[in-house]
Length: 191
Image 1 (tube, rainbow, N blue to C red):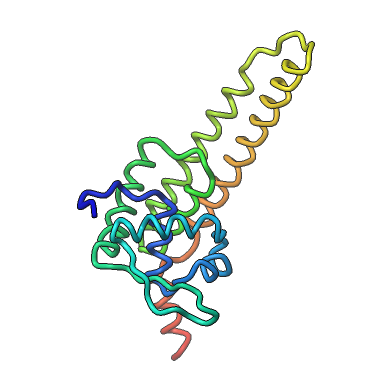
Image 2 (cartoon, one colour):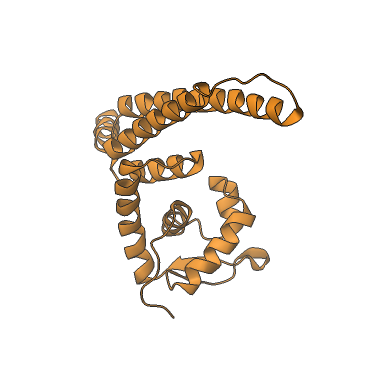
């Protein structure tokens, strides 16, 4: 086995975190986190080859369960930190990566990093929308030109909507109480 494995992707780090939290099968990942079996299985096989996960006991109906190795625990921590830094420099273009890493950051007590990631990604989406909006509209003739014009218009609208959505999530997240505040509130309510 290769001792120097590549840095894990956002999906890899997310799967490592799911396994660490007790979501150990592809089916549980689909049911609890919305990760398709078609996406999780190849990723889990890759993580197993890299020595980050290993097969555990088969669960009901012979569902294959996984558990983290020592290297997997380390990869989860360092992978999240690496992706937060990488995404700070250049936010990813796919929504799932943004939301996975933001969710992991929140669950690891890094809410401000999640808010920053969401805001940076929203700004990148606004920039991309502007790029599509700034494309000159040529005289529309022929299917290829009509298609390109429609795609540019659709892409601009998509990125504007995504920017609004990510910004709203960042605002809501920033307003939400932290785990420490939640613990204090729960303790006070028990009195």
